[in-house]
Amino acid sequence: MSQLIVGSNRKIDPARRARFKPDNTPDNNDRVEIGPSALAFDEWEKLGLTVPDLPALRVYRLERLQQQIRKHDCAGLLLFDPLNIRYATDTTNMQLWTSHNLARACFVPPEGKMILWDFHNCEHLSAHLPLVGELRAGASFFYFETGDRTAEAAKAFAVQMADIMHSYSPGNKRLAVDKMENLGYAALIGLGVEVLEGQVLTEHARSIKNETELNAMRCAIATCEQAIEEMRDEMRGGISENELWSILHAGNIKRGGEWIETRILSSGPRTNPWFQECGPRIMQDGDLIAFDTDLVGTYGYCCDISRTWLVGDGKPSDEQKQLYQVAYDHMMNNIGLIEPGMQFADMSQIAHRLPEEYRALRYGVLAHGIGLCDEYPAVRYPEDVEKHGYSGCFEVGMTLCVEAYVGAVGGHDGVKLEEQVLVTDQGAVPLSTYRFETAFLS
Image 1: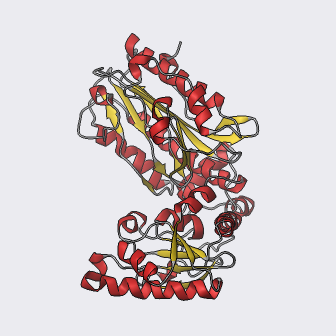
Image 2: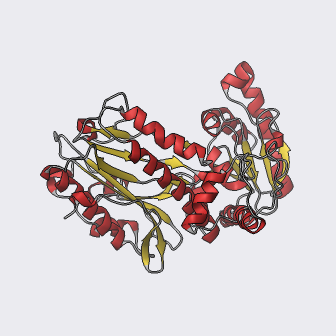
Image 3: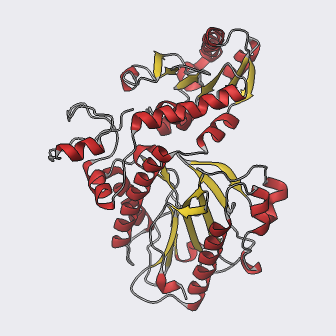
C-alpha cells in the first residue's frame, strides 16, 4: 500500500515535497492511504532523517524473497502471515484481524510478479502496486468463514495453487509455505505438492536490511521515541499504568504508525517479575515504571526498545540504582561484543554474565532480530543454549534488539532496558537514541 501524507491543509514547499514523497503520488486528501502524517514528516526533517524510497524498498524486499526461493529450489513461496505479506507486497489490510483469520494470501514466484488474494471487495487496496501482477479472491478456508464447506474451499484453493506452480515452474512440486490452516495443508499434500517450511525462507530474507530499509526503520524509531517523550511528560504519581500506556499508542497513531504488539508496562512491585501487562494500578511517587515498546510504527517497521524510569521528582534508592546499573552495563557490554561473522553460540559463551542473584529471572534472550516485528535470530543466554540455542552467525545488515532484565527472585523492583542496533563491518551501532537515566548511573 502506498505510504502517503494523510489529509492535511498544510502547505509544503515543492522542494521539500519532492524529498518527502519519493513515489510522487498526487495530493488529494480524499484518496490518500495509510502512512506517515505531516507531523511525522516535520519531525523527521528536523532530525535530518531521510525517508525511504518506497519503490526501491519494495523491489529489494521482493528480490530477497526470490533469492531464497531459488536457493531452496521451490516453485514458489505461499504466504498467509500478514507481516510476510506486508514484506513481500507492502500491502496492509486488517493486519491484526488477518493474523488469526487467514483471509489473505500471496504467492511469490521464483521470478516475476506476485499473485495476491485479498479479502472480499478489498482489491482496490493493492490494484496500483506494480509488483503485484494479479489479484484474486478465495484464500479463506477457516471455519468462521466457510463452516461445513471448509474442506471444499481448501481443496479449491489447493487446485488453484497447483495450477499456478505448474505455470511458473513446470514439474517442480516443491512449495514453501509460512503458515496455513490444516485443511489447506492436507489438500496440497493430497495433490502431490511437497510442502516445505516457508519460515526458513522468509526469516532469512527479512534478516538483512539495505540502506532504504534502514531509512524506513530510522523513521519508525524516531516516531516511537517522540511518542515515548510524550509519555514521559505525562508520567506522574496518581495516574494508572493504562493511562500512561495509552499515550504511547496515541503518539504512534497520530504520526501514522500502526499498532503495538504487546502491552508490557508495569510499575512498583509489578516490575518484578517481568512480563506483566499494564493494568489499572495507580502509580506512586518513588515507583519504578518499566516498559517495552514493541511498537509497529510508520512504514510498518518495529521499534522495540525498553526503558525504566522513576515516578516523581525524588531520587532513586540505592537498590534501584544498583539494578539499573547492572542492567545498563549488561546491555552495553553485550552490544560491544557483537561483530559480523560471530556465531550465535559464541556470543552466548562470551556474553556479559549477570550476577548470580539475577540469573533466575533473566530475560528469554540476550538479543533478537527486528524488522517489521521481532524476527530471526534469537541469541540465548549460556544457561539456555543447550535447550533453545541454534546455529547461525551475525551478518552485516542485521538489525537487533539487545535485552536486559535485572531483578531478584522475591525482590520489590526490576529494571528492563533494551536497545535497537545495526550490525556493521565495525560491530554493532545504535539505531535507537532515547536517553538513559543519568540519576541511576555512577
